Image (cartoon, rainbow, N blue to C red):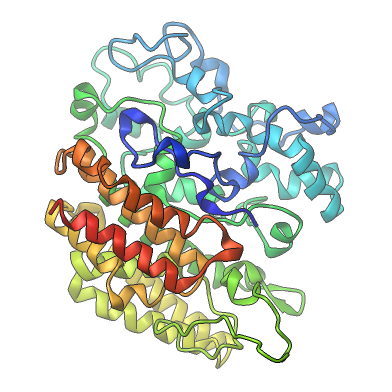
Amino acid sequence: MLGIFRVIARRVASFRLVSPAVLLGLAAGLALAGLLTQAGGALRASPAQAEASSATLPGHTGVASCAGSTCHGRSVADGAVVRQDELLRWQEESSPSGAHSRAWRAVREPRGQAIIRRLGLDAAGVQRDCAGCHATPGAQRQSDGVDCEACHGRASGWLATHYTVGATHARNLAQGMTDLVNPRVKAQVCLDCHFSGDAKGQFIAHRIMAAGHPRLSFELDLFTTLQQHHDEDADYARRKGGKTNAMRMWAVGQAEAVKRSLELFSQPARAVDGIFPELTFFDCHSCHRRIHDGEAGGNVTAVPNPGRPVDPGTPPYNDENMIMLLAAARVVAPDAAAIFDTRARAFHRAMLVGRSETVAAAQALRQSADALSGRFAVASFTREQTFAIMETIASDAIGARFTDYGGAVQSVMAVDTLLGGMVNQGMVPAAAANGLRIQINEAYAAVRDPNGFQPMAFRRALEGAVRSIRSLR
């Protein structure tokens, strides 16, 4: 499994605290199901497979309907209201911003073909297991990958009027455009493929990852930045009710990821694979450790986790988003944080009892996550709250839960996102934040290699980064 933090990249205009030295190439697990594998490989899928698609869904108009030079198809970003080069950015070959357009190509390239061979998929199997995320369901052309309408909604209802005089964001939404300004709505759209969904071909089972598919990890604000095709200028703020609050986007994304995971886990058809539990729900590194087999000098590498009341021999549920959600709740919704933490512990304990007890605990925990998502969606996430969240993430109470790679990855993404969000909101000077690059990079380095992850060393690196950030407070 490739490390998540071979790079975390952000457009310069949007500000992301990553130095050029860290920009070594996007991690496979950060994008749509293998989108960021190398381009230009041999196209071994047949033409029939490349263009095979389910029937075009009513209302889907296709990429070409957006591509006019007076719309989103210009070669330069000189539009008066929007950039108008959005299609060019969507197709960008050298940048993560073009990853969606390369989605179907990834299936046809060497890595995708190797996964298909290991899984023993024929053309119908590829359609069943891959097309749900690597192409827009119901689109006219699968070769367009994840097209405009996969995120913005089928366009027939609003295409002809969204650019006319008097058009408003509210009217576009009323005519069927997806409200991507709403972080709860946006998270649900992104989670379908960047985490797993319930539709055909949108569930990434453990067997698929075992065949070579990247491990999934979700952080809404980071993914938003990587795929951002617009500038958040004064005009954008006027039309959309303000600039994106990255801190709110991050927190809501954590809550919605917890909800989605528990929703899928609660479905009997998703929770098992034959006689085995569906391992995609569990923490990878709890099992993928070195085996000493009792030899002299053998050292148990597992570290006790106070948030998981289970014994070391029990594979724990992947709780990386739960850890971040608890950290945010302790600052923004402290009255609900204790309930969430209690229910999370009860969920872990229930796994030692039985399936029915675990599902009941999952539903209770999901309700808490849903309530937090609603509160975060209207919270202001002030400067003081954001600093406090970062302090909480590095605190002993939360830091002690970073016993496995997934939670550690989420925490360093969070610190970067939250600090960058404060810069974008004018709460912290960019120059001062950039001066902390060395400490931030040390936290990145501590999660660069999943096979070499050391919890205690990581905690020290994270604490050092947050101590440095504290100086801005």
